[in-house]
Length: 475
Image 1 (cartoon, rainbow, N blue to C red):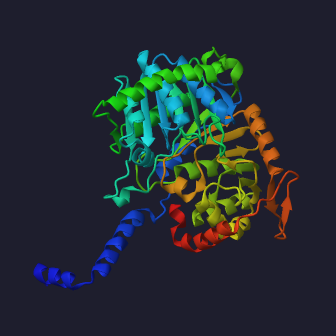
Image 2: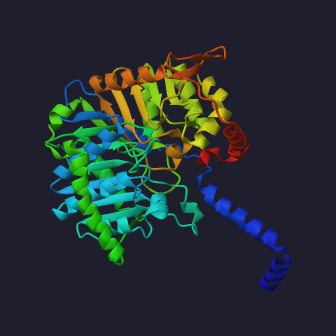
Image 3: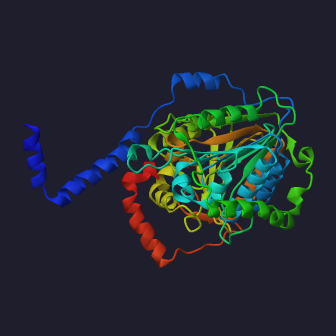
């Protein structure tokens, strides 16, 4: 059959059928590269086995636990205000809302005093929030500011759309940094929104950095992501009047911030603000925008296997068969695992809530005990507590997207003091939760207050429970 014959046959096809074929091919290009779940290579396994995560003596790095949105903003403003040499910001989501402008104002003022500023943002936010936005244009127009977008959304290349950069951290002068699950938006920073997400992050401080420090591990990771071919420059091509006006407003915003948050502009005693650790270690996923080996899940699973009692915080649970098997293996190894996740009526992610409704029995069959948390706000925390020493906090959700598709970071901290602080919160949050007992009935914490789903949400979730079944590994 020659090309003329083929073209003639195509022309005879109904337009609707042609469009359907194109749509199916597009969906295939979007999902097929990520259908197979990779296994961790022997190279990474051997590398992981050479790492140590516990020490018996006190280390040089100190930690603070940030569990309040306003405190999280204050810490950022104070760190940036003190910076003398370099500021690095990585975030999944960056909006030009009040919290976002607070951060841009602080960064622009730092750049004005000669500090080098580097900002990297995931391509989804770059596509939806930053394209042509005068506020971001005003920030990147400064000679001391560099901005890059990781894997910018390109609808003409659907095979690139699944891999996202989910890292969230701020580093100042290579000696102090924040890392956790907070995005740079009102929902996570400050007190600008009635609807909030509860989140936690860690501040690590080390005045005299040595070669093995976690800040050096994080800086090395940042350089890898920053220099990848997927990370493209975000430039201000035209300094319009609107862009210049935004720059002036951002600089003037500092005066408002000094009035609103005066404590952020006073000297802080970081030693007094932080507590001792024995060791801090960085856990991470591969940096390339592609189907990934599950480095993070492997690392967490290996650390959990060394414990006896494990508490996991995750906004939602979307496990694949390999993750289910690992949870069962933990049970068979006599490791007690409990998970604190959002009650469906409280969860902010409808996909995660829907999958939990579909997979609840499978999750409980692994032997884990699930606490369905009903707080004032949805919980966005990602953390793992192992016995009374190890606390792991960062960006990793217990789902297949975080396991196989996104970049993710977690800090593993050997510190009894930190572990006790987070564990006390976990015990409190259990009182605001319900949990399924072995006989299938629910028991309720003393502070749990049921919230009924509206009829509309019940219908919505009813539809999603069917729609999401073939898509759950991509949610």
